[in-house]
Amino acid sequence: MLLCSIAHAQQRVEVPNAEGWHALVLDSLTPRGEKELCTQKHADRMVTQVHRRRDALGALQWLAARPDVDAQRIALLGWSHGGSAVLATTEAADFEVRAARVKPHAAVAFYPGCADALKARYRPAAPLLLLVGANDDWTAPQPCERLAQGHGGLVQIEVYPDAYHGFDGTAPVRLRADVPNGVNPGQGVHVGGDAAAAAASRQRLLSFLHEQLDGAAR
Image 1 (cartoon, rainbow, N blue to C red):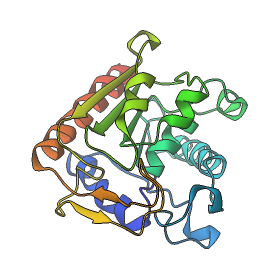
Image 2: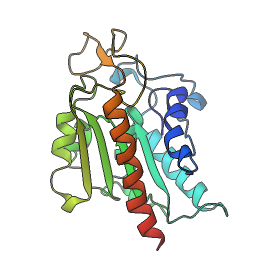
Image 3: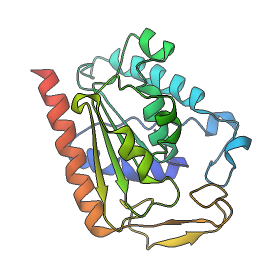
């Protein structure tokens, strides 16, 4: 799943790649004539979570059919808007998710927007890990914290102190005034890496994948 553009997603999958995991980067934007979503207002976006959910479900089915893929060890990862797409693709109450022949056995969402899923009373169709920054003023952490409550432990969350949106990157924190959405619409959002949060989230991601997928393979 994508962050806001294809380049961001390609950088992020280097973490599982380095540990020997194969990664399929799903591009829901370019085929629809879009390069990024970050600077678009929510109401103006032509690429919706319905598109992204259907793309993800199709990709899961394609992966599971490959002879070099273990269909019991497929996880869904997403960052930011792609993280929200992870929630959309693992919503147990959604008809398309219920009808899908192939579902992920684990899902991880980095700093997703959780407000819509929380409002819809999200129910996870797979074990889900949320990784969020405490200072995120683009996709606020509080809805994700509330989303993680209950579910019998099926939804886990890690909140990294002093971390902003994009904390797993290496660029310094900066204000992006070109982003119209966020906690304070029209005032921009802060984006940038946090070395401690990046290292901790990397280990948490890998331990979660091994915990969920290695267990499923036995």
